[in-house]
Length: 443
Image (cartoon, rainbow, N blue to C red; front, side, top):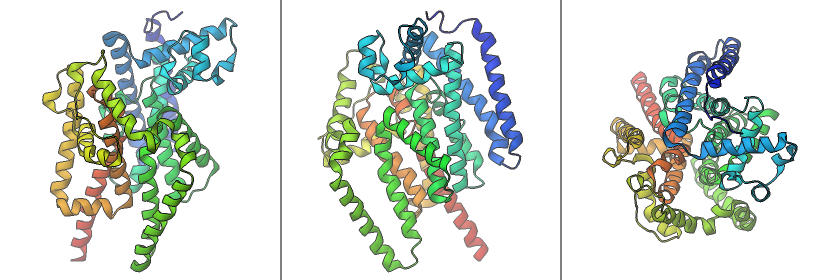
């Protein structure tokens, strides 16, 4: 039924499908002659994305021989076989994880999130001759659409710095390798990019169009199904971001100081009133369960019989409470952003993560050196967008840093913080440079 996952037929199909994608991109490029991002990066970024996606596919198939990506694809092909033999119809697309597991001998991704990826792969298999590399190509294209929209959003906020932003979003290795395969991470990064873009169009640029509302809600739904903790970490910084934008429009210093605390109290009261409904929706990541679950995840990595000793790290136990979590946040943030250190890379594949972590460390020191400590923190708290990027990256980093004790897994899980942390640092530098230029012009 599966045949060879990667076979000689791919030598014919891959170039054919890739040519179709490139023709579509060339058409988009021709239709947007004034768009500097599309003209400079659309095709180059896509080619790099596809190269990294195929690299990951070959790595999983020929080096490891197993992985979530292969499991999702094989389950999707199995379901397609069941449909083709008449055992089931397309109603399988609407079955939940429990029903699928009871009726079929498939892994189903360990839960509803993995099953969702398999359903997407199942649909794509009908237009890809059920080939793993072609389905991977489609997943890479889906991810690229969201990442390119994220690039457009960040460039709209920092015009003129397109090269720096593109290097982070389009040409950063882990973003393109781990965010391009048949994985939850791929769909999450695509959705996060579209979510940011549509919210920017709706709330900041005031472009109230039905398509933005639809894509915004669809992106929310996808992330909430696949990895709701991405939204859990994002929602609080984003609300504060909107509040800061609102408050900055108030000219009176007196009213600015009053409005923000009042709005925060209103939001806190809203949460307290609807806390049960909200926590029920969050489930595993509800506030009253969150810290216990983070600690349990940490323990499961360290005590698992299949744990790779050379790739694990231990931050020590912590009290599953707000105070206990806060006390361990620095260690979690350092682990998520700046580790593995070079001397911790005991496996060849971990060296690449270590080099990326070293880059983040260098970028942090570089921005600190250029702006000074005082200018660094002023840049964060005086600019709502920078505050959003850095606060989300730190909160998300603390959550995954404390709950993940494996460097290999951490390289995938930290993907959502990479663009926000790096662009947040760039934004601090951006406004510092422009402020210096303005001061020189005044003098």
